[in-house]
Image (cartoon, rainbow, N blue to C red; front, side, top):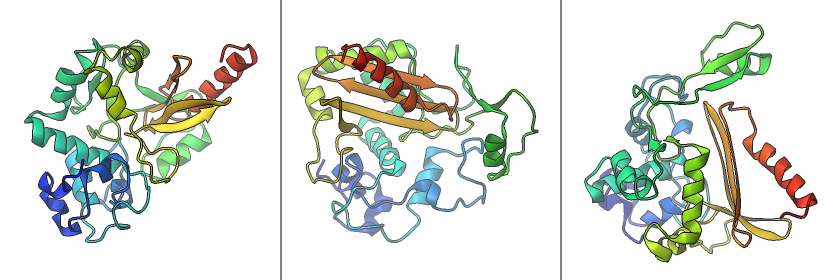
Length: 275
């Protein structure tokens, strides 16, 4: 955690010695978000336009200065997780997708989960993304140079870019339940693994200061949650550790508001005295 990032990613050496691996983990690096920097191709940062993790990293590291001194602020950036995947590859000697299969997914029998690092792969039972063919969706697509005809029905949204780190994991409800169960059973590397995942930064930068986890509270109970979205999906997962209860909502509509739907279900359960 205290190692310099430049030890594994030499391109970051220009930012000095203060940038540590822990700054990537806790989102205190000051690195630029990749989609806020221009692509050499001039194309938009949009998953319908092919780009790789390495292209995203190269663009994010193009600026000569960080946004702020590492360790002084919290600022979420997908670039942090992308660099962490590269560090894992450097240390393990494996592609990140292969490492995750061997060390995480297979031991937990998450048989329908993978890191999607090949957008040409045929994935059985894959749920593609769809959004309503309405004015809002059409205008958003038009803003990135994609034109869809108006009319009734749905628009297919294809994730064509095999970028991963901040996203790119394909899974389902059953496998996520197995992942959640490990929090209590310690099946994966014992209690030590869970303790590391639950370790918080403690700098007071807000609630999302663990290892990619958000620490919150709901109905007076501590919770751990994360809400995510991409071109083809909206997702939300919230764990109530004391209750050993977790809610997961997955939508293949990026406007599906998975978090909002999950919160509605939690409200019903709370009124019924279940949580």
